[in-house]
Image (tube, rainbow, N blue to C red; front, side):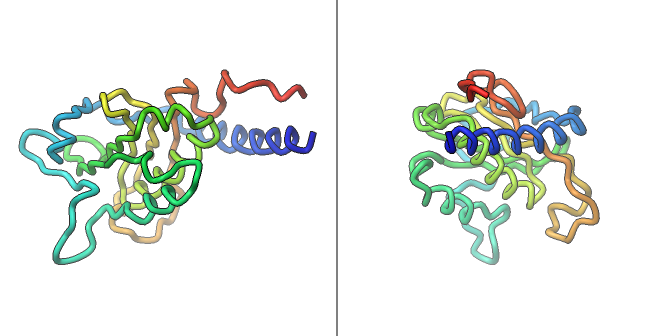
Length: 189
């Protein structure tokens, strides 16, 4: 019974927070740029533009966006492990917002429950948004699994303190919703 109440309280909090965010920001859309696995493997955002990958190291300063710390924090948790994240490609946007395309192990991703996927999306999405990037999560075949999309002010990517909060929304394709999984079993309340 206590475990049921714990799940109910946790779900209620998430539903409440996300429904406010989603209702207030329903116009936020993920990047429409097609994901191309072969370009991802080459570290290219398009035919002429090189992106920043998990293998990119800037010899003269901090590589931006710097996502290794959040990757290592997530990998240290047993529920995610070090094999979940295959790699990322960060692309500065000229005609659309900057984005990070993240590839995950599809088998491990599908084994996560809704709350675990939500936690992952929010943690990695928060890290990318701190640098002014939106997040898209894909499997190795290029199918979109999740997004974390924000509406940024002009100074977000410069790591300055923000005067007003950034509007962000997370979407989980497996749950087919922004804030609640219709496939999650009923709590019997």
